[in-house]
Length: 117
Image 1 (cartoon, rainbow, N blue to C red):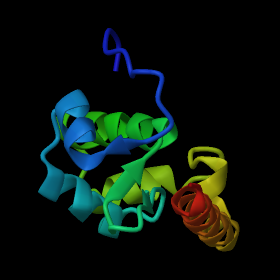
Image 2: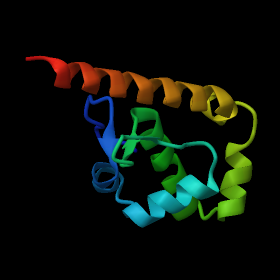
Image 3: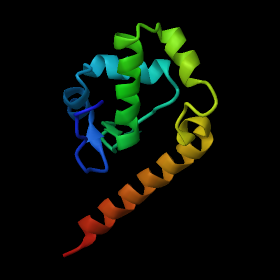
Image 4: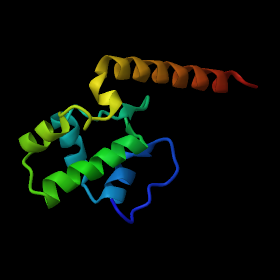
């Protein structure tokens, strides 16, 4: 990652992540399926919303796969070691619950915003 600065934002769209990391969107979607370590939230329009920790993991995967020569299986095994995964990756049910709460809050905010005069 080195000299790349990730902007101070809560969420990033897949195109922004692709531009920041140099990894094409279809590869990001593939990695999402292959590595359970990150699963970006989705907006109501089903657009992927990556967070800073997801982008950092993309940089880590890119380094493992492209620079260090790991295979997908090797990188998955390496990331699966205790301590190498982000805390949210080890608690998928908690992540699912948080994503559901986030979606509910977004819906509520949108509903409240549309009901104002």
